[in-house]
Every structure is written in C-alpha cells, then in structure tokens.
Image (cartoon, rainbow, N blue to C red):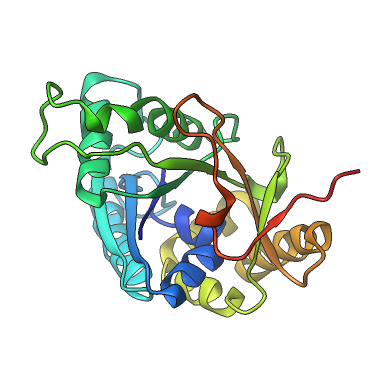
Length: 241
C-alpha cells in the first residue's frame, strides 16, 4: 500500500504522525513525505536561503529514517496560498505517490500553512484522477482516503480514531530530532522542549484511547471517499461517552 503524508513544514509529518508512519513502515507499506513549504522564515539568526537549505537537508534526514520518498514543493514558509500553482503542485504530488491513503493537517489549525495545506489536500486529491488537468506525472486511477492529523496540544481537534504508537514513539522522537534547526526555532518562539512537546500529547491521546501512547486522527467525510478503518495500522475507535 502507498501512504502519503502531507505536511506544511519540514518537521510537521514527523511531529503529528511519525509514530503512525513508523507502524506503516513496519507493515511493509511504501511511504511518501510531501512537504509544502521550505521553512525559509524559520530562524532567528539565519537568512531565508540559508535556513531553507538547512531545513531541506533535515527533511531528507527525517524521511530517511523510514526510507520515505521526500516530495519537496518548495513554497515560501508562511505564505502558502490556494492558487493555480499550489493546486497543480499538490495534484502532481498525489500523482507521484499514487496513494491509497493520505494524511494531512486539520483545516482549523493554529498556523495558516497548516490549515491551507489541509484544505488543498481535501480539495485537490480527487483532481489527480482528471486527465485534462495536466502535470508532469500522469493521472491516478483512484481517489484515496484522507485523514486529518492532530493539532499542537490537540487544540480545536476532536479525534475520531487513534493509532497506538507505544512501540514506535522512540522512532518518532528520532525523526523529529533530525530537525535540529526547528527545535531551536520552537524554543525561541514558544519556549518548549522537544521531547516534552511530543510526549505529553502522545500520553494524553493514549489516555483517551486506552493505551500508553497514541496519535489521533479524524477522517475527511466527503462523498466518494468516506473513511475505511482497515487502512490504518491497528486503529482504535474513539471512546464513545
């Protein structure tokens, strides 16, 4: 199975779905990491071109932990827009990965790049099948299922599904640790320590799901691609209260 993760920034996939990606890898699935923006404003000290080059290398290193193919869209950080150019880039990414399932950001996240990238995935994933929309890659032959990833600290996100990442949390930490420049940037902006930022939400979602650590998701409920739970690795249903 082909699994595509779409993140707005170079560290987002690992941060919000790294444990799940590692479980797919353990099953033998083929992984693709699509990064929409290049992180070129993500430094307090380095100029845009320099930090963008660093973050590209870090994204390669993070993807390499799981042998994921990196798709680098190279839009400017914090200025991702819904445009013809961005739609065609996302459609071409879908055609490269030819996914059975796609993970993306929730559309009401704190960061506009997060929200817009999630919107672009949800709007454009079916367009990859349309022959008259021309990109470098040929059209796909199916519409994949789409799942939204959790938000930072779970703000404005009500999960419907969980994946147990108790056994893959250390791999998630390893992948996020490849993004050293982002770690420093987040300390400068928000003052958090990397491992705590990962561990606290994982334990919180695990508590909800009845396991030690979990990542949380919700399906995109649109005609033609309602969610199918069997596509997720050992998916747990949300606790119904």
